[in-house]
Image (cartoon, rainbow, N blue to C red):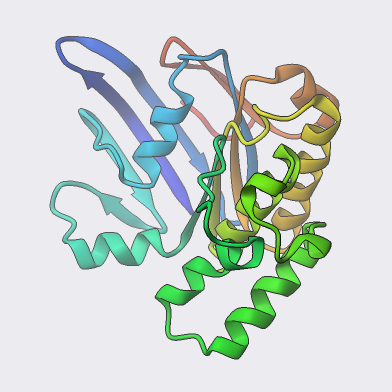
Length: 225
């Protein structure tokens, strides 16, 4: 199993429950929309997966490894290298071009400069912004910036891709195109969890989904308690 939550609760001081007894499993290569209104706990759940938060109680396992306070930094880094993250606000570096932004994660590896340039540019072509390689973020539309952010998230070929409201800043037509792009990435073998409050688009897209409401998992189409 790629990811499992078992009775996970996250509480912020003094006593605000953000997630309440959440349990589910995601198989290797799976795809799931994580739906629910703003404030439902979607972002917090994703933050637990990429270890920006620790659960108050319950167990989380990622790639078969339990996530807990005893994980050392080397173990955390090793797990994080297998996870790509796409944020709603893009988080592109303004003084870098499109391809430089997309290539950034590869520069933290031992990849050659030739491979970094070739692979990042090929990926930007694939996500549909191959004609914007040398443009800076301020010169790009919201949809173009999001495609570059997606390319950056998958440039190291992660096993799991987390997307936190990636279509919140684009119109419905662009959002559907981005949903299809995530679907194509999934077909290439990357597991995807995509958080969104745009339930009407999820229904139109016809993918599996789970729903959070007030921190509680209220419905699921993959294994959930």
